[in-house]
Image (cartoon, rainbow, N blue to C red; front, side, top):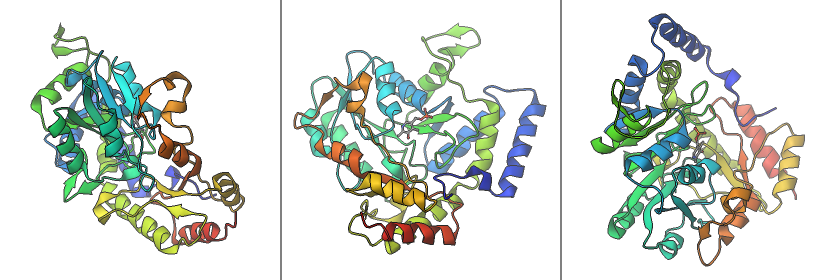
Length: 366
Ligand SMILES: *Cc1c(COP(=O)(O)O)cnc(C)c1O
């Protein structure tokens, strides 16, 4: 089976290093918020060219903590996309703020600026852009739009580790950026993990308090925070996996390029190519097909796993059906949800497997 992810094929050298990292923490006698977390925060900030990184428990919390650090909460509105992991919108609701949903661009699945502009209200305090599937596209344009509207620009970077725009990495454009290290993300832990990056030392300081009960010094609490700490074991493992991230990202790009070159089928259309290779890190390689369900079955019969991201947009989920949305509706999102399909694109695919995926897609006749 050619799977979407295949961690058992991680290089032996990496697995050895992970075992060593675990032993290091086990012997250190210090398990929460210590040297490994501090070192990982430095290394992650450095990898992105960000000023500050704050490790947290997961990507969902990173979004909630970031907004709370900006002072956004009940009564405030955040515009974002319905074509994303549910966590993007859930985090805004958990914060007590109100999400509003704009439509997407059909060729990339990314948030549409004109739709956002139609939704903007006096209560809008922020736009959260999701660099979906690993695509960093015009973050500077979004930042400028938000600056001109005097609202915050925020990045959901759960899928876009190391993606760049004009030489600058995603995660350095917004008031803060949220990162998830869920195992399947491009940089994944061996469990849950997350981080927030920001150029603002105030936001970084507030986030560091919020993740630890709002504590400033031992047993002194300035804020009502939460328990959202990154533990030493996951931080140590992330430090080892980070050393491989550039290599793995390059491999994802090679696979994507083989798909773009090889896939020729009028029933299967890959999303738009990035403007420059650095813009895309191919967390997922996504195609659209009007016969999506048949395509899934066709691939499965040939030993290839393929999964839609995402088949149910946020505004069609039971708890979030009533959210305010583009007055013209979310038609592009709904069509995308029906047609999208992610092909295997993990860095351990062999040349034979890549060729098998291309052949299977090209042999699909509806
Ligand atoms: C994975 C993901 C999240 C949530 O991250 P967790 O670590 O699972 O909480 C948020 N947004 C996007 C776009 C994601 O892909």
